[in-house]
Length: 321
Image (cartoon, rainbow, N blue to C red; front, side, top):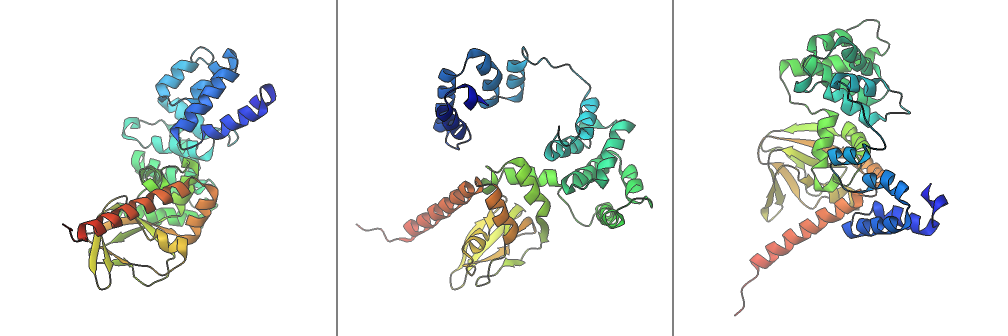
């Protein structure tokens, strides 16, 4: 819209630089807009462009957009029940998940009804968030909902009930989609990917649990997936050299095999009991096309690996006098 009111090329250049990963590019864009825009437009837009805390941004908007305070439960119910045109899936999922937070122990019936309704949503992210919220806030209500005979999607309810039984028996620790997104956000490879896109890959990722000594990547095999370590330790082994590295949580393994479509150059073995997220080659490449920012994460990982290899070569080289 600004390009219709001001110099089109300058506005479009500023727009591109505002989303640039380099801080100096973003700062340059703000300088252009600061000179270009009228004060009334700057007061409305700059709080969105500047790197502010939520509280600081709200304070900047207070004059033009005064907010009335509502109880947390009312605000959550409003977000959960809003139309998809007004509130996107990811925001709804976060609101649903928040109802299971320990700080909302006394969720009222209306809020729980809104959460329970999401169990039958066509959006997998909303179903998952609703499951975990009810499991935390009202487990009895959750079992009642997934065993209702009149539910239209009997297969989906069967899957939810199986997951509930697994949790009740304490067989396996599981991560919700929200927890997966928060975890992946802390991994260098994915830190630039938008949350709503990351939610999709988090939903499709397979959670795997490995015992100490389990080999999950074999040298020479063709790569069809990558692994992100949630917790535990991994030994990197190369035939003829033995262990060449050990890595822990948030490390990524197998990314080169799926990018280069070449045999694995090393084996990966669990050095302790561990949990990982397994992402298929197809899903990873789809994510790469949806979020070009992921390419920056790949470059960072490759640079880290190159630095690691260079240090090993340097430490192994003889000292010349």
